[in-house]
Image 1 (cartoon, rainbow, N blue to C red):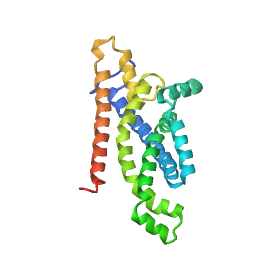
Image 2 (cartoon, rainbow, N blue to C red):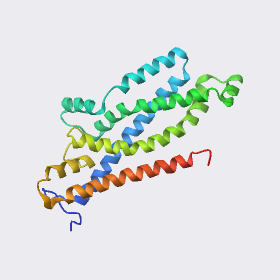
Image 3 (cartoon, rainbow, N blue to C red):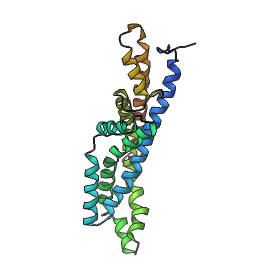
Length: 224
């Protein structure tokens, strides 16, 4: 009836792994998706604006880059007393989007010198149209690859902050919450399945997301 055993409250470990993996992936997808949108908008503005506008956007990116994820989550947890998966995803996104913005800005700055951009500009196209029609679609491919690779780090980050007690709050199951419960039962040698099976599921999620990122990188490689 319980192929992976039960926890100290009699709950089925297999069912909690299924629900916990879903929560961890949803948190990671929400954090990566929101950081992708914010980074794409801010990075495109930083690369598309002039010298002073780009410098201002760069300073904004640098300001948000100094926020440490763990301390920000601790501060949010101290205020809210209980962190939901949505709150964890928002906090993770607020600390991850500067990396995406830097990458998008660098791609836009490199594409501004391309012949097709200069041709569109010479034919009278407006800069917002060039940014929307040419620069962002061509800059988004490496960003998507980075975002898929970032899913694995987001899953691990959610598990680590929840394991420290400042992430997804129980009774909601997640990868970090299952490992935290296993840590509480380390004094019981017979309960090894509480750590082995959730840890294996978490490692499997990381491997799968990294493999998906590698396949996407190969698909977007123009040299292949």
